[in-house]
Image (tube, rainbow, N blue to C red; front, side, top):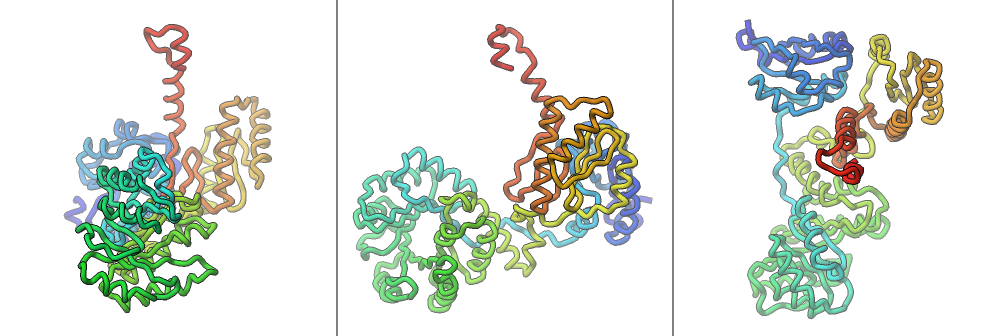
Length: 487
């Protein structure tokens, strides 16, 4: 009887290795009862499931006819869509750690909330843009827009004329970018208007002939108050052009709370006037990673109904702020709209520390020790200890140098020698393990540490070996000199 006849929504085929099979079989009965599915376990002829690849599985996997979905180990390399096309049923990767399988199914059964919508628009501010060569500015603007910026901000705080401003605006427009200009110099301000800048601030004079698509951005005459705003709005009413009210958020210790309260006040006084929040002062004056700051600041902007936020990548701690803002604005829009916790939507902002540490129990480690026969060093992190199972020994130390020496001694006692490649590899992996231990991250040998939004994948040992052999392979038809160059 298939799963449809039994009333089950799915019949999963769990693909695993010999090592994980006992623990998987203990987990599945409760999971199947809780989430209403049937299952079959396919044990592949390999000890460590994470060493499998999709092509390797495709050659060996036999799928029973009642199966409706295949679940592969999370570390399985290769394109699952190829296997999916071959089998004709959905194929997905499960969690990296088998202990996370209950959380994986909990997430599967949560409502799927869209995170492709947002209401906040991002201005990526480039200070002293007129000092940049035009090709450099265009390349920077293209990258900022690709990361999520909706407009490029050209900032010039000095009082020197910038005759090249008009050419820059037209060049950015030719690339399809919107331009937001801030300048305190009147001739540059007028040039920005004449060139058709999409947003211009501050209001140095009331223009008689304002381009149709230009938004005038107004600020209070006296910082810390709303002085002059009402009068400015009245003078602009006669030209009937789009107007935006801008509020700069002040760094902590210099008036942060008051600037937040003024922003809330602005929404009550002028509820129909689009509000822009300038986050640049906080990013410039906070020696802290931008991600957590932006999560709170954009959450505040979303809740008070701001339309625009201005950010900068001019300081190193905020060098990826545009990309972070793009992820955050989608997350908080979803959280605000559906009344859910951001934690349940996305963990890509957990960059320094992982969202949670896999809680592998001692029984699991004992089974692992008993079944591994490969003498090659295997590295783990358990609590505050760096651990290695190498050459028949279980080694532990809180110091990576001491652990490396212990591995070297174990190799000598086993009649083995650590060649330079292996020694470098172990040093690199021990470095990652130490970072993971010290910061509170998960460590998995041969895998990149998880840095959330900014994780950079590492090639597997197999992929490195293929590349190395390709570099060393002689190229037909080349001279000896050319062969050396290719290698």
